[in-house]
Image 1 (cartoon, rainbow, N blue to C red):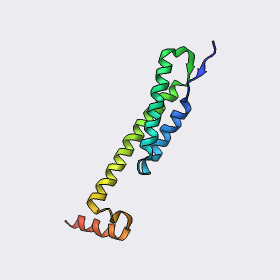
Image 2: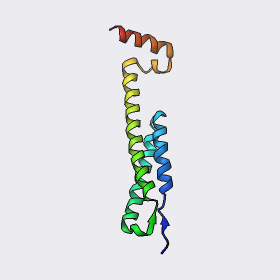
Image 3: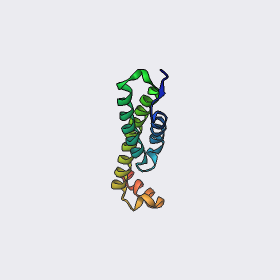
Image 4: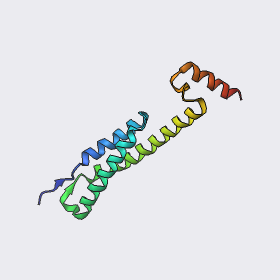
Length: 109
């Protein structure tokens, strides 16, 4: 019997990589990471039913790990953005001069 490629194994790997790259874009990486994890869970279930029939499980495992890393980085990035938005003020987040003034005030305290 010829082995088949596991469904979405390459897509899961690509989404895992994009979830890491997307962590700098205000949470897009979280969405990509969650989609990759859902697809990885489905692919893992298919593979575990009959492992001799499918190839590409290594891509699924790698994509799953990259997705978890991407989600963690996105959560940290969002937490840092929210923290500085709270500390400096949301109006300063879009105004570089105001942000520099408020950061200097924080450093002086």
